[in-house]
Image 1 (spheres, rainbow, N blue to C red):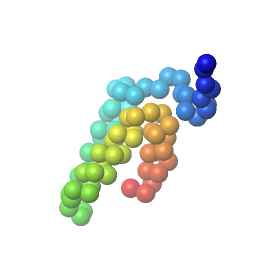
Image 2 (cartoon, rainbow, N blue to C red):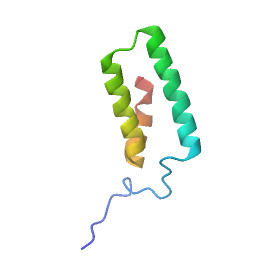
Image 3 (tube, helix red, strand yellow):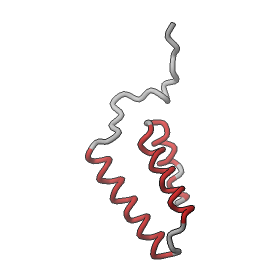
Image 4 (tube, rainbow, N blue to C red):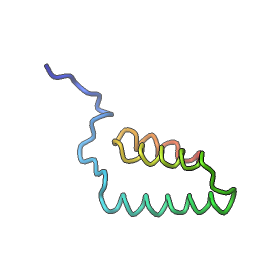
Length: 74
């Protein structure tokens, strides 16, 4: 028996590791880490936060949308 998934959870053509995504993520993540190091100093909680955001960004299309939606908080 098949279960129907919500349309928000099934996204066709989700490019998880495409070159444009990797380049833009690397650039933005590098600038964010540089800003953290220069502005307030890098601490262990920053590493945990950065790792969690990275995992969520590449996990699925739904979690990527959540990361992008709450990106203004950073």
